[in-house]
Amino acid sequence: MMMRRFLLRRSFFTSSQAQIQVLIAQSTDIDLNLATEEFIFEKSNPLIPTLLMYRDAKTVVIGKHQNPWKECNLPLMRRDGIALARRKSGGGAVYHDLGNVCFSFMNPLAGLPTKLDFKEINANVVVEALESLEVPDVVRTARGDITVRGKKVSGSAYKFKPKNRTLHHGTMLINENKEALSKYLKPTLSNLKCKGVDSVRSQTGNVVEFKEGIEYKEFVDAMISAYLRKHRGKVCELKVLGEEVKDIPEINSIYKEIVQWDWKYGETPQFEYSLEGKYPWGAIEIAVKVEKAMIAQGEIKSEELSSNFITTFNALLNLSLIHISEPTRPLYISYAVFCLKKKKKKK
Image (cartoon, rainbow, N blue to C red; front, side):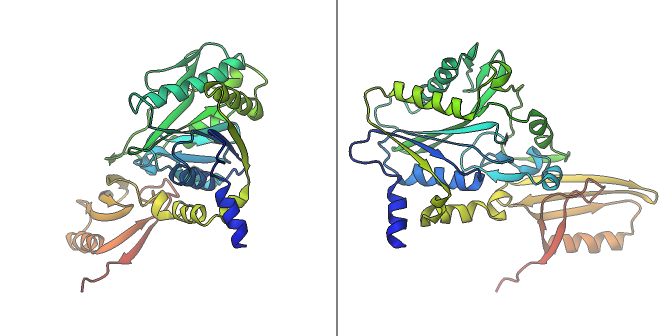
């Protein structure tokens, strides 16, 4: 068993003859794919340019510094069984399904005049791949997006490993469910003030709207061909990665971390939320300050409720940790399920 794991781990490291590598992951588990990407970025040879491609089952993916309550329709996602994932890079919220292709470029910083040049170099590979498939009017925007006739078909996010390596990962909308994209990326909560990064909404399009007949395999083949042309003359290793990558201890460790509530929700930047409700007996307002998805401070206001009730409730709110799970029902104050936990006393 130890030998099998060793061989699996070593399979990510190119042979002494290889100068570039292309990896195709077969898993559609977003968390496993992100864990695999993180492992390759951190552990494989930083001097070997790498292209990784994969697809995911139905998922909303948010950036490292984003607030899922502000970016997604969490109640609808929960009802429909749509996964939520948080990247370790920045960028905005995106919807993934099997009509979407994910690509990751990992480039050594050595040899680049500036650390930003890799963005343009990689984007040119994607543009060339689309043009080879006869997709018309492909343009790379100043923001780094790729559009076709004005509609965004690809967006990207970036991560740097200082003095070592860059990660540029993005998506390509081949034939994604656009109705799902619009409804799951439409948050239900208002009155939310957040220090996190907001997504930039754009008009999107699928590649098949402009060139019929393009599917996952055709795009992947076109990407590989464009990547090889970019690195013309270099020896390339092509590997297909199966579900067994989860047997690699380092990948399994990353996977176990990023599937946790503490990562998906608990890494949400501090935010404030207020809601109001009007009832036959009067009105009520609740305001809370949330840190790591836990209510740190809160206050209830109402002219109709007794002052003793308000004082007692506010004392309870500020003496307890309130854990916010996925929102369930958009009914008055039932925007989230609150589970009261007593604070641990300091010794």
